[in-house]
Length: 64
Image 1 (cartoon, rainbow, N blue to C red):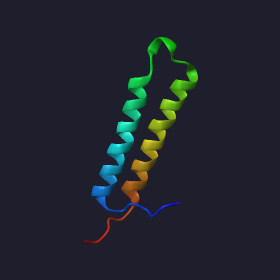
Image 2: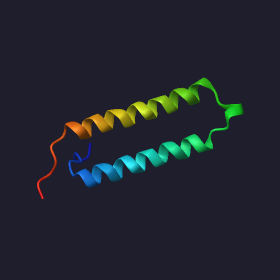
Image 3: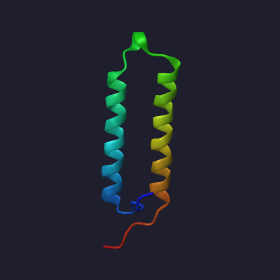
């Protein structure tokens, strides 16, 4: 595993990247062809984002 991100700016940047990836996946889905597994994957992505956000909230910020 990599080093923990404790700098708030890096945390925001990381979350923006992850949200952009989620939006790209969401945009690529065609509603007519979406299956339950696709919806489950989207839910898992949202759960992962929420988990990462909770981790960031509980970490102390780096001293500058």
